[in-house]
Each structure stands twice: as structure tokens, then as C-alpha cells.
Image (cartoon, rainbow, N blue to C red; front, side, top):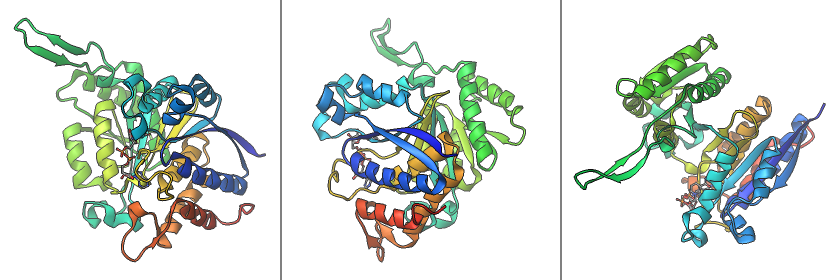
Length: 365
Ligand code: NAD
């Protein structure tokens, strides 16, 4: 029986529409090959929404996202909207989307593609074969904890403070996501905290240990965040799945991503308890190259593959897309951001066509 999935597309600004078009073409082909039927609804977000409606996240967009099985988001932002007040800025639309959908888990894979290994700033033997997913808690911790603020002390000096706080239920739900992802990967989960200093981290560690009893097939380990940062650069291959809080995850996921060296290649996913996940490239709207057919669509296409794997439980279709990305790179095709001597320069559209060719005829399975 044909599986049906409703996808809300949020192309947004800058290179967003160009890379979205490539991802949609890839999904349509893979849908035919795997007997999956996708229905696409396009909605406004970011600067495009501000221009059309005066606000960065119209109610209709949030409603469309809530009514779908998954959201494929490209990027928002651009020079034109940079001077608007914060609440009207494109970025506010993205934060509103994450809050509106209750997306508490952010997944950032860092996979070294053999064809792009020399783009990494680390030695080949250190990064070759790296395949990590960082699972970051996204809606709690020190970024949202109260009390917070800047006050004047009795001596007239100013004091700034924030609170790192996690409730058991918040830790449990991110732990569950992380264990389940580790189960789908190499069954090794490393939890990162600062339990030697922070009480909140001790609670985090205790809950992780408790949750581990439900996942006897997953090997759980713990690292302090300072050591984790060091290990990530020293010997990144030791990691499979990493789970950590909002602040530590913000820093470690960027560090892990940069092991790969190429921002145009990195996908991500944000998941909630139920309801649709949001899949998006890590990069921004690249306004400097927008509308010039120069964008690398591969991070967006790999985000679509993540959607198939994590929201639709279609690992074979996801793997076929990931394989097609490898094939076009093996064939030497490169957009400007990943170009190197001896390779064949292509634009966004041509890269899309090469991907479709690599996927093979639409009706074949
Ligand atoms: P950026 O990621 O848009 O661009 C950084 C550099 O990388 C640019 O030179 C750009 O041309 C290049 N680049 C990025 N993605 C590329 C791709 N797919 N193919 C080829 N080259 C690519 O970051 P920025 O310049 O700091 O920000 C530009 C705008 O994007 C800003 O308005 C910012 O707020 C917004 N932004 C949005 C998101 C998001 O939507 N999630 C994330 C980061 C930045």
C-alpha cells in the first residue's frame, strides 16, 4: 500500500527557494521508487512572510506546519530585514516555529564524506570515518531558566545572571530521543555534562543512568563537557551518538560540525514529543549568492533524507538519497563552496539534475 505523507515546505529567503526546488525534485523521484506519496504545502516564513503579511511567522504557516507530518525548512534572513526591531525580524519567525511546535530535541549529524575529507582543518587520519550525531536539548537549560537578568547590587555594581535548570521530565524526554537514535545507529550513547561542578548536571546524569535500564542494547557513557570538547578534536571517531543540554550542545554541535569542514553539506533536525519534526540545513540564507544558481543544495537534500529516516521511518529511501549524494561527489561535481582543483563546477540546478540521474529512473525500485 502506498504510504502517504504531508510535508510543509518553508523555502524562506535567499537561496531557500533554489535549494528547496532541488529537494522536492529528489523527494518526488524517491517517492516513486519506494511507493511513497508526498503532498507538499508551501508556506511563508522569515523575510518573505514579512513582505507579504507584515510578520515573520504568520498564523497560517504555523497551522499548516501543525497539520503536516513533517516540515522541510530552508533558511531565513537577509540584508533587507536586518534593521527591523527584534520581534519583527526573520529569525523571530524561526524561534516562533520551534516554540510553536514544541521542538525540544535538535539533531546535528557530523559525517565526514570521503570525497570532502581535505575540507576538514584536521588531519585525514583523525577525521576519516567520523560519523557522529549530536542530540542537543533545545528548549530548556540556561537559555530559558529563571531567574535571569541584570540587576544593580548594593554597592552600585551591575550583576548579570542566568539559571541552568532542568526538570526530570525534560531530561527524560531528551534522553529517550537520544537512546532511540543510538539504537538506530551504532548503539553507543555518550552523555555530556558537568556533574563534577553543577547540581543540575548531577540530576541529568542520574536520569540518563535510570533511562539506560530501558535500553540494555545501548552502551551509555558519560563525559564532562571540557573533556568532551577535547576528545571531539583529539579523537572524534570514538563517538557515535552524543546527548547533552542546551548550552553544551550549542557549542559541541558547532565544533562537531566543523570537523567536516563544509557548511553547505550539513543537515539537521528538530523534533518534539509528537507532531511534526522540522528538517533544515545548518547554513543560513546565503544572501550573497541568492538567485545566482550558486547554492549548494546538498545540505537541504540530506535534511530531506533525515526526514525520511526519523519522521517517516523509511531508512532505505533515506540511505538511497545519501548514496546519491556520494555518487555525485564521486563523479567530481562540486558547487562553488566545496570546489577543489580538478573537480567539475556546477550550479545548484545542475547539481539537482546530477542527483536525479544518480537516483536512477523514477519508476524503478
Ligand atoms: P550563511 O550560512 O547564510 O552564509 C555564510 C557563508 O556560507 C556565505 O558566504 C554563504 O554564501 C555560504 N553558504 C552558506 N550556505 C551555502 C550553500 N548552501 N551553498 C553555498 N554557499 C553557502 O550565514 P550568514 O552569512 O551568517 O547569514 C546570512 C543570513 O542567514 C542572515 O540573515 C542570518 O541571520 C541568516 N541565518 C539563518 C539561519 C537559518 O535560517 N537557520 C541560520 C544562520 C543564519
